[in-house]
Image (cartoon, rainbow over all chains, first blue to last red; front, top):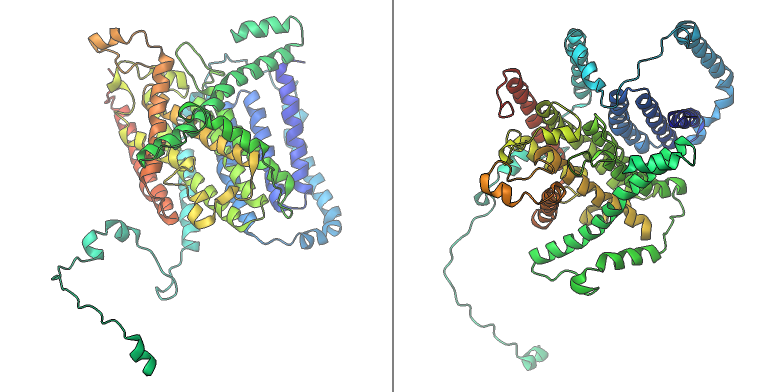
Length: 216
Length: 354
């Protein structure tokens, strides 16, 4: 067994185990963390398949940003775990049927008939300093430039839509808003004023005569 | 040297085991000095801030307090690790590990000198550092959630939002660097800056240099962006429930990340191991004996000093201002500068075309 094979089987078994754990574990936060582990293992497999750019971007985008936001939401939710688990057995047959159907479709599309070992040529082994980042970048920005720009515009529309849906300004009497530009621009003279006063000598306070206090 | 070790080992054992052992030895060669540097960085921090506040700093253990980090480490190791009864124990113990593992793993691609003194000289080095250091946020999130404490949870929420925001600015700053250097390999980025101080990338990319360093401060949760552990607001943030060595591991991770950010800044913007006197007639010969590694360490020490200096100087940002700085100031600046560099690159107009 070569070193690469050891790494491959290790990462593949981690990916499968974490995928199974993700769908079977009770706690949604832990399920999200298993999914993260699955992403990392998959990224490792991609890197061993000489797709280091895709592997690193998978970690950077999905693990480093997307799953963090996902966890953010899941942690804030007050999920009742027993409620989620209640109908598990009732939905189990339907779930199994659906997963078998999805697996069958995937097998037909990407099964050994089309992408088997005998169908695909062995990929060329590249030298260690071969950069597939440039290889990806040049067709992406030349041949597929329109598709690239369209995808970017689509994402922009998504961002604008998401922001408009959540943006609401309430009356200043309900919520106090901070105008940070104003706060940053504030000068000393806006906040307080130094007043010159004449020095006044105060009169001494008369000492209280204790005997007289007692008489009253 | 390591190839020789691997060749010698594979004569006796399986090939894959030989590779594994060689990799482990390489990792130890990088990690041991790193941990030592972290230990003495804590001492330097206390000394520097002490002098800035006209105090002595630690001076009891050993001469000039030089054994203070060792004493600290021994103390923390002997302390009990308290496990909160309502917490999620597996994740509670896993969290410090997840914090330190990326902070150490990222060192695999950092070159320390010319002629390939680097564990793994991969061609997507910049991307690797960015990707691996982005995993570090999980240590903080998980520790905050698993502690079952409101303060820890608030710290985790703050940290995750802050890290994601500043990663974008950091990424754009890196994009300009690799556009100018025309490579993602860290060794080649340094080689692209050859020819004296004015050829280093901090000159054409000065705004990016500033943005990268500020984002680095925010990424490592250092003052003035240490809202994740703001003592005055949320006690100590995400690690409030941790004690003993579990707490120390978070500390090690934070300082290892500081050193990593300083190394990255030095490599990408300050010419890495290149001598600052390159091309200056007399000085170049006078300092020819200084090895590149020493120049790199000097640059990194200066940047680390900046980290400590900022901590002693600036008050902590308010949380909404941290977010505003990241999203409304740094990201627009980086996007504009990406376009500026793009146009300069297209018209072959730039100081790097000589």
